[in-house]
Amino acid sequence: EYDYFQYHPMEEINSWMAQMAKEYPDVVTIVDYGKSYENRTISLMRIGLKTDAKKKAIWMDCGIHAREWIAPAFCQYFVRQILQTYKTDAKMEAMMTNMDFYITPVLNVDGYIFSWTNSSNRLWRKNRSPGPSGDCYGTDLNRNFDANWGIVGVSSDCNSNIYPGRGPISEPEAQAVTYFVGSRKEDFLCFLTIHSYGQLLLIPYGHPDFTASNYDELMKVGEGAAEAIWKVHGKKYRVGTSPAVLYANSGSSRDWARMQDIPLTFTFELRDNGTYGFELPQEEIQPTCEEAYSGALHIITYAHDKTFNGATATAAAAVWTTLLALGVNLMLF
Image (cartoon, rainbow, N blue to C red; front, side, top):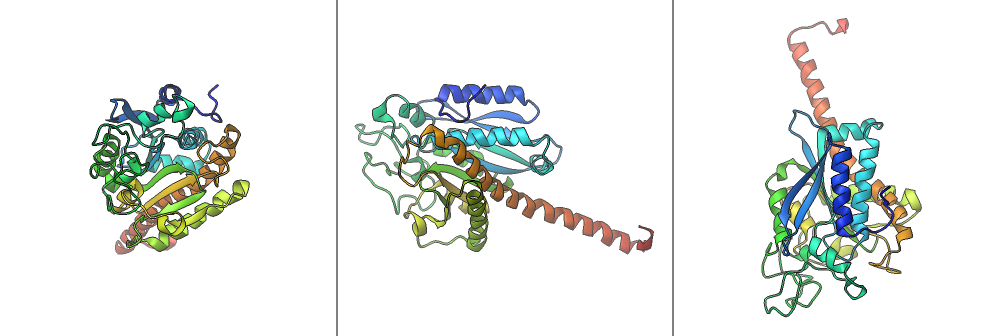
């Protein structure tokens, strides 16, 4: 029995992904969509019910920062929950009929594996590509996206944890997301990227001089998600742009996704507030995942209902309009 409430090394996560595809062949497909710097495969799980209709999509990635082990744990828990509920929960079934979930349990594969090698590497954050001088390693993948790249919240020192790389999307891991999501960006309703720590829901933009065109909507949906989180275990998550509640930064995947016109883009910063920081104890995995699931589901449900409930109402109105145009006596219905 797979233990969702302990941290797993990469080979166990890979085996788990394969097992999920085997257990749920009708709804789970493994998609390899890139290679890391060290030539490891970057894979996601596409989860949804097969239909003939063109489907919308939800993006979720975990583990863009190697040391944030709670993030991959959450992606695995999220997958388990939606697979366990769709057969008995009509709402989840509808969402999996109308949308596909694209979930990457570990995006920064090289960095994650490196963070497991020994205790001195446990807090490694970046990927593992060599810097320009060859004597330092790693680019911060969440500063490497083509979104106001290299302007704020970065360092040109390649030893720094916030080194943004040689240029926008210089890193293969960032390229993989950019090409996969970018090539079907009109399908995505929602882009969620999962981090730790700080108990925050961050909306675009990381640069203080830019405001998202749907800022009010993002704040409203984010506040609703924070309330949903709070109701589970009483943990408070703050909502806002990165400069407002954390720090300014540029080149994040969240900002890039919003610049691709994906309307609902959020960064989750999971537990805690710094007591354990990145080394969150395993006994905190279950409550953290339970509350974050509730928050993520709030955002995803909002995205779904805004798109599909409106479409259903429009279709119904069109039918009635047609009937009226044909002079049908509505008293017959």
